[in-house]
Every structure is written in structure tokens, then in C-alpha cells.
Amino acid sequence: ENLAAKLRAESEILPQDQFVTLEAPLRAAAQAGSPSAQMLLARALDGTSDGEAFKFFLLAAEAGNSEAMLEVGDRYASG
Image 1 (tube, rainbow, N blue to C red):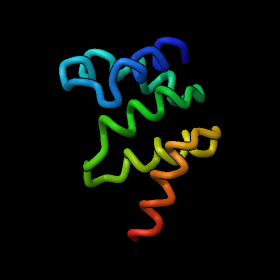
Image 2: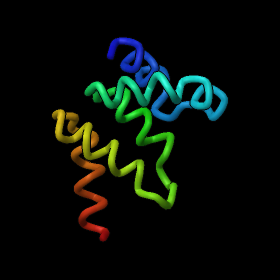
Image 3: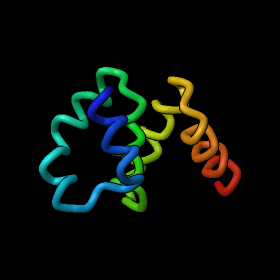
């Protein structure tokens, strides 16, 4: 969680080269319940057609992340 939180503090969206390098450990941290990792993944995957970004926004929202709650609410509102 600490590393993911530090990365989020530095940038809301990871540059593609960093995402490629960090994707596997971020996924592991997200699956282990790290809201910061979930948000980093959601932002990096946002716009993909398979809904994977929404899954990570939802996990972060369920963990109490208010930014993720807004994202989920906006997505439900816009269909």
C-alpha cells in the first residue's frame, strides 16, 4: 500500500512504460486489497472496452476510497 500510495501521490496516471513494468505487482497489491493500487490500475486501464477499470474503481470504492466512489457513481449515472 505504501508504494502504491507514493506512486499515486506523484502522478494520478502512470506513464505507459512505468505501467508495463509495475502492472504485475500492482495487480497483486490490488487483489490483496490495496485501494491505492486499485486506483492506479483503474486509472491506467480507464477507457478499455472490457470494463476492467470499473472493477478496480469498484474495489477501491468498497474499501472506502472517496475518489473511487465518485468514479463509480458517475459511471452508474451515465449508464
